[in-house]
Length: 159
Image 1 (cartoon, rainbow, N blue to C red):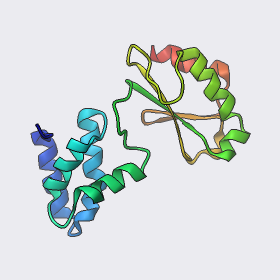
Image 2 (image 1 turned 180 degrees about the horizontal axis):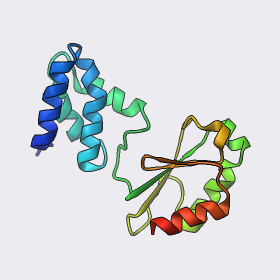
Image 3 (image 1 turned 30 degrees about the horizontal axis):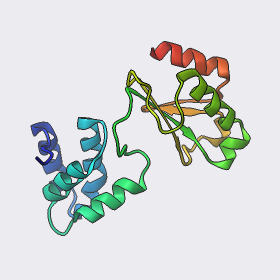
Image 4 (image 1 turned 90 degrees about the vertical axis):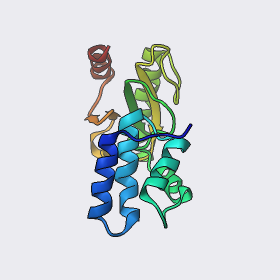
């Protein structure tokens, strides 16, 4: 069974197709709609998006965009998706120690989700806040200049 977009998303996709003469411009917001609907972007959803956008857009093109950007989850994530920067700038400011602290507090390793499906922790490339490290992005919010105590408080507030 293939993925079916909601009627609201179909309406939004149709508006995007009217707005952008170059159909490639619809891939990013289309993937965003898919992720908003199901929490992640899978092959069935990408096939449905490619079909909805239509020729000349192929599944390969949609897949290429989806796998290039870390903002698209390729598998289900927890209610709170914690992303921690793994670049050298943030590493020098202590993100590696913060990462170990979060793993210890949640009882998971990088790339894992807690058994209650509440938290997923992933390392990503550059979140664009090097000067504010150590930092994390949780869902759509940035938390900067973190200490272990601040991180503990954030996790406590989310539970």
